[in-house]
Length: 234
Image (tube, rainbow, N blue to C red):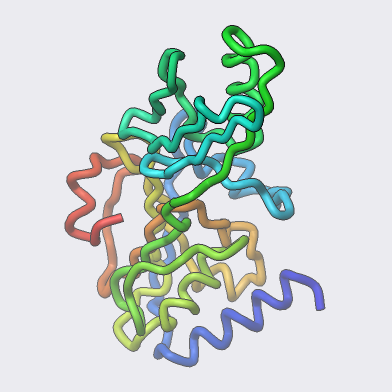
């Protein structure tokens, strides 16, 4: 069975939890520049990497081991600014990088003071990727993001729509900076009626889905993070 038909069947199962659709249909607002929900998401399928490597985040703990010079062994935690403190070297920014990438950087850095250092890096503690689903759902809450998950699949994980859900105006919030969130309005009714799942967006860690009870007349494509409180906390 092709992926698009699997998702159509999955979505039909989600709708069992809800009642009829509302009549209003709203097209997603265009977003300026190159936002996280760019044209490549809306107009064509995105090639998803298989088994992508984990990217380091604030709060992760790393165990750095030196095989030939164990006196340099150290355990570091990524600080809120994305840096780690290194023994005998300047701080290093590591958020967004993978462990193999950081290992190579450490080898180059420590080669300034050590001869051909052999370094291994192990991720000891980390926050598992997650998404948040709030609003008119069977089981709203915070869920672990396991592998490639779309908005429709996430709604199913969160218990599906309930009888008060506004299916045609589901909101997807995504952090773009420390102060701003981007917002995408998704018309699930139009999506399933047309059979076009190109806007069944793939979630990123930290995304929040909000299913409203009533029609949302206006919402800006970008909003300050403090304003998210009315929808829930991403």
